[in-house]
Length: 203
Image (cartoon, rainbow, N blue to C red; front, side):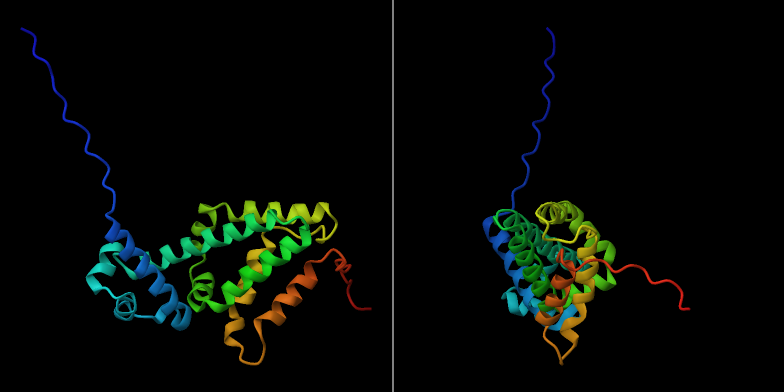
């Protein structure tokens, strides 16, 4: 009589319980608030108190502070990707581009930790941006504006993160509103802002 081999069934993929998902969201929301105010110096104990959970709960979801910071960066770029898609849905190409730049820049300047991560951990921000194809989305928004003749033709998608890096430090300047700098950036990206010819050596 032939033996029938019985293979063990594959274990079902473990789905986080509803309370675990809620706790993770509470930790992320609290970390976003604390770090927006205090930057990367915000302590895990403070984040746990703000979330209304124990420190052990924080570490179960995020084994290190670096894991927590990276999760916040990923969430932030998911939001920026949404903003880019919203910009593409606006009929007026310049209005869509302007809305995207203004909203993204204000998010950047109001979040101290995001500004610090942008300048101190560029590789982390790069991974978060690539996860949502951020440059691809920004490129779509810009090409649409260039085709309509409202964005200067020499502007490139990589210009935007460079400008965001510059805007990241505006929260440190008590003498000027980030809105002023955002306006300067937008004025420089308009099609009417023709690139200057390179100056030769002084005579």
